[in-house]
Length: 153
Ligand code: FES
Ligand code: FES
Image 1 (cartoon, rainbow, N blue to C red):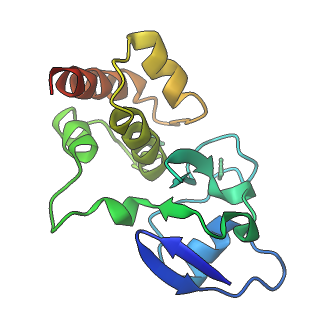
Image 2 (image 1 turned 135 degrees about the vertical axis):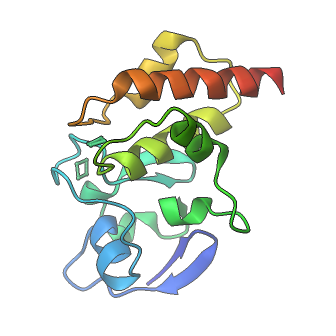
């Protein structure tokens, strides 16, 4: 089966009905996306499927045929960081960083929605992403900056 990841077509083995996360990490060597809970409860494995944050751990790879998958590796644009990555770095958000790929991909979807987002909408948008290091205040600060930038543009 073919899947489109970060604008590249890959042929992947679907024997045993692997999850999208298994295929990304074990077949495509895209190990930026992390395994946390394995049951859609932590957000560590979130990638964008047609622009929607999606837990790759419970998503059968066969369900994403014909869809656009975007992972943390796909944010690189000619060696430049995505504005979300820049903002998170500026706020010194992460400690261990394990939640970072899922947090960032979820934030990318929020910021690229171009909506004007108030604090509650930001919190709702990030719901389902858990940080064991409790970096939530810094994440919220970074998201507020991004939303202000988005609305000013
Ligand atoms: S590993 Fe997928 S949501 Fe936790
Ligand atoms: S920075 Fe450690 S889990 Fe989020």
